[in-house]
Structure formats: C-alpha cells, structure tokens
Image (cartoon, rainbow, N blue to C red; front, side, top):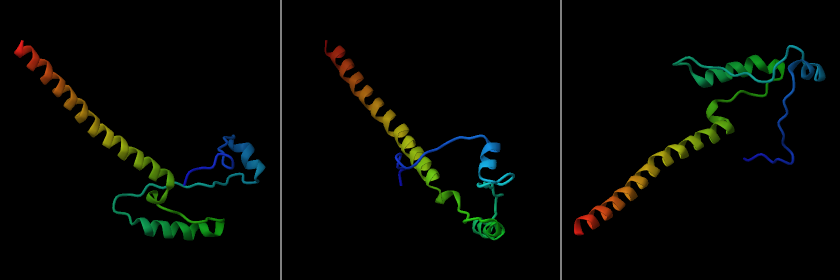
Length: 108
C-alpha cells in the first residue's frame, strides 16, 4: 500500500534518450482518457483493453481503482473534516472566554 523507498524510485528523463534506450521511438506507456457525460465507464475500459491487447496493453482501470486517487480522496476528506471541526472548537473556546471576561467585568 505504501512505497518501499529501498526498492522504489522515481526518475525523470528526457523522452528521446529514454525512447532510444528501450527501442520505443514513437511509443507510449500511459493513456489517460476523459469520458463524456453519460458514457459507460466499463464499456470504454473493455473496448480499450481490446484495442491495446495486440500492443502489449496490460489492462485499463477506472480512476476509483487507482491507489493515488484513493490517497488524494482520503486526504481531501480529512481536510474537509478539519476545516469543519477546528472553527467550531475555536469559536466555542472564544465564546467561553468572552463569557468569563464579560461576567467578571459585570461583577466588578
């Protein structure tokens, strides 16, 4: 689930030297598609798998099945929760302190 940094790395390289190193000039290894509204996701995935099978395609998958999308979605949910809860706690403490100060001023 989490990358093992002893065996995992990300390396950036220019396209032309990389293509010549792997003898893949004009080739690609990733495809991203945007579906129009009302398109059936599974039908597009099945058709794309059929098209790319002859070229060594290993299978398409939806955004909801990507691990990076899951991490990002969960992080956004956490941020939304924090953005909701933190101000409530802050204003609650501020109202309590204001109440204490005002009640002491009135009693004096």
